[in-house]
Image (cartoon, rainbow, N blue to C red; front, top):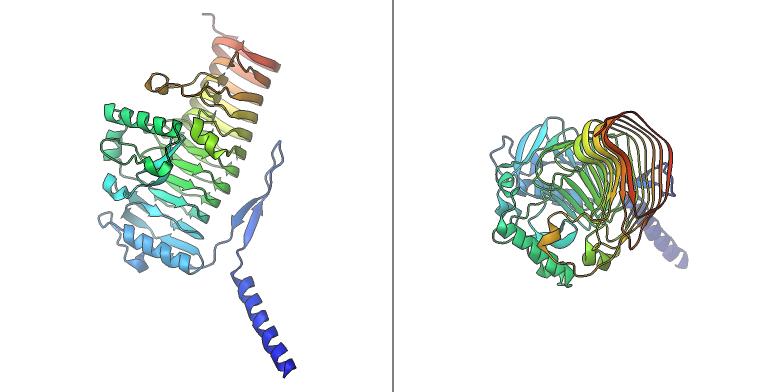
Length: 460
């Protein structure tokens, strides 16, 4: 009797163990070399199950809105434990796509997701952010919130309609007033759920891709053509790989990829062609980021080509949560960027910037090879007051083995007298032709210059 009971209990335990092992998530790891300690990055192995959107009623051709069909495919895939939601070749009109955990949105070759540009399609508002301030706004076109294991893969394309968003690129008085309202709410601790910005003529454009508080992100192979706002925004995410992307977006605020208060990411083998900065590291704005207290850290960017952009590598200006351990290497900007390596903040930000590295980079034309500016406020300078002054600590900026054909200046370092920048190393930098000046330094302690050369300097 006791033996039979033991056998029954043992059998039940064995079955539970087998089910548990069969359903346990599987990960591959990517080891990344960097000039700072960095844990291997986890990449989720998606179950070999496909959920074609056509099986859930999607109709190709660019006329039928397939938002529900795609949502149904995502729901079924999630309930089945994960896999690929497959978008076949063809043009598929849709509104916002909201991810769930364990979903790989796979765009087959010649598949085009064509997103509507009707703002009402992106309501109800979702929890997102606008230039470093959390709020509820129009849903991003592709949105994931508190998901684990989310991916977009394949050789297809994301191609939103832009007619309405282009009109919203302009910043009329109601939009600027909305920015003032959001800034004031964020500066006075108004709860995020009360910051409802998708109203009236606020015209606060949604991101193309916004993954918010997600783990194990994977973006691979697809193309992007245009975006209403920031193109790829990885916000408070933990772990991921962005590789083999072809990104082109030349509208207002069309950064290529923004990593904000995120950690442990690899960006590699991508091409960016942007109307704003190409690769940007951010950490929230002012009091909102001090509340969240989450630095952006352990980011490696390698083997990328930037065809056009304001900045090859931008740090800030939203840096209030702190930024550290950033490494860009083996990247190429053959044409023109405004600044190759730009560290920017202001007296409202606080936070810190430390241990930032750029090496093995080639550039065509730029205004500044390296610039640090501690007084970058853009339109906010006169739009809103300084609620609280906090100076950013900047320490450990490293540039090595960089060549440019032309530059207006090699480096310009403008620290804050109240808290000077410390420890800037500029080594093995060569510019063929310098148009204005070699270097300008103020409020910086311990600048190490070694083998910084130029072939020709034009006299002013």
